[in-house]
Image (tube, rainbow, N blue to C red; front, top):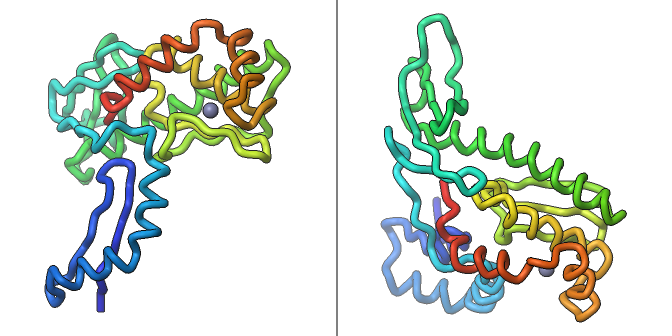
Length: 218
Ligand SMILES: [Zn+2]
């Protein structure tokens, strides 16, 4: 039988799921019991500015790509095609749904963004990293990370795929920031000295991301 569960995500914050047979009192107890865990977990999500507003992906919905607004056009798949698909056409993101597709276009759109993000971020890391002689061992473009970018002690750079919704110079700022962590895995003075050299305008883009990051949603 299902028991009370606590979930923490960057999108919803802390969610307590209570099956019918439990009382609210039980949920409170579960919360108290796991409060240390919850506080620790919630701390990880300090990058996001509260719960995100998720736009409805209907015809005419607006989505960002490289800081530009795209209009989502949802239509049914032409008869000569078999599989649902997503593609760009001018300023529109066309979503063509096949007859047996789930009518929710979101999973397809997310998949398309992840693919584009991976391509672009790998390219930016290679170009910016190549220029300064700092390249990661591995690049991960994740579906849900709590941060726009991170660097591990093993030399892996991870990025949130929704970063590609931001303007190109903001994307480059995050890439440059994480590349500098390959040299200094902290936010010390030396780290910022290096970042100043690699990407002098970083402060303005960091500010942009803090103020607008919550709008980079699919
Ligand atoms: Zn950092």
